[in-house]
Length: 256
Image (cartoon, rainbow, N blue to C red; front, top):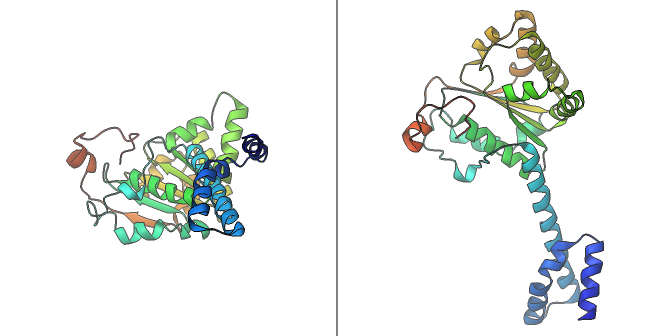
C-alpha cells in the first residue's frame, strides 16, 4: 500500500494522471494475458498519451469559442445536398485547405446549415491539432474595439495568429471606417499565412456595399475572397424551419 501511494505521488509530480488512471486495468490485463514488461509499459504510456491528447483537444475546443459545439457526426449531409455538397464538405473536413493556407466562403440563405458546417470544420481542425477561433463578424469587430486596449490587442494577436479563423454572418450590415480598417488589417496579416472561413447570407459580389470606401473594400475582398474555395447557393431548405420548427431567427443564432 505504501508503494502504491508512493507511485501515485510520483506520477502526480511527473504530471501523468492518465497512466495512474489506467494502472489497475493494465495490471489486470498483464496478469490475464501474461504481458511482458515492455508491452505492459508501452500500453501505460499509450494511455498517458491518449489522456494528454484528449485534454489538449478540450482546451483547443474551449479556446475556439464555438458556443454550442457542432460536428460532422451530427450533420445531415442529405438534407441540403444540392446547396452544401457532401463531397465538398468531406474534403474540407480533411483540413487540407488549412495546410494550404486557403480561405473558404460559404454563402446562402439563412438556416440551410452554413454555421453547423463551419463549426464542424472547425471541430475537425481542432482534432487535427490546429488552433481555431470562431466568432460572428460583428462580435469580433466589437472585441477588437474593446474599452480595454490590452484586451483588444490580445484578441487581435490571436485572431491574426490562429491556424483557422471562422467569421460567421459576414456582411450582415454596413461597416464603419474603423471596422473596415480592422478587417483590412486581419486580411493583410493572414493573407497566405493562415486560413479564414466566412459564412454569409449574401453572395460575395454583394459584399462591396458594406464598406464605407469601395477602394478599401476592394482591397479587403481581393485578399479574402479572390482565391478562396467557394460554396455559394441562392436556394436551400431551411433546417431551422423544417426540422427544428423554429422559423427564421436572427442571423446571430448559429444553429445549425
